[in-house]
Length: 152
Image (tube, rainbow, N blue to C red; front, top):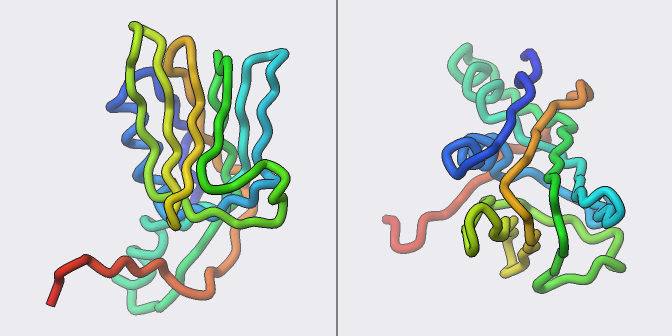
């Protein structure tokens, strides 16, 4: 399956497209970096390719794919972690959602919400993000499975 075209986010609608494409991405803490001098936060994730996996299932193949994807946020003034520490370099986080909350227009914060109650908050002058696949793909061992609370 071809890579996603680069995606840019300058508002909440754009960010929701990036968030949907990164749902269930796996991110090692060691693959995240805050660069205060250039006010950038960057990470590399193992993105689960929901589109490629759905196409494979539709064609009768039980194939699932992941690919390396880069995500960066510009104009970041501060980063804080909840439920983990940046020294936990081998810890792998499962990304559930990305949200932007405007506090003093256009400034606000971006939250990367992970499973197990973990989160990362980026304080930004304005929302400016880019997502780009890095071309390395592999077969995933399984597809993420979310149990819906209260479902029968």
